[in-house]
Image: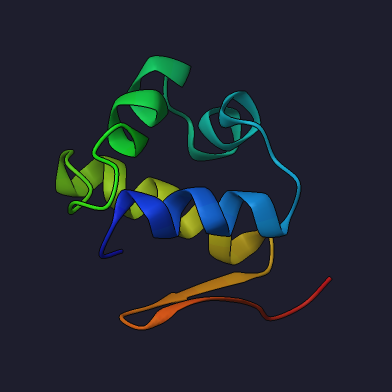
Length: 74
């Protein structure tokens, strides 16, 4: 994932609040909040947490690419 903006966009595609993403990724909601707080900057967080978020989004049907995000199934 490149930017916090992409994280918010990916979450928005599936209609999830931060709490839903946190639960699906097995993280504390505050962790997702901090990851998204970077604005247009790169997402900050541990590799483990980033992998958990990306895995949860992919499982929900969202693909995150260097160029953006897209819905892959619904």
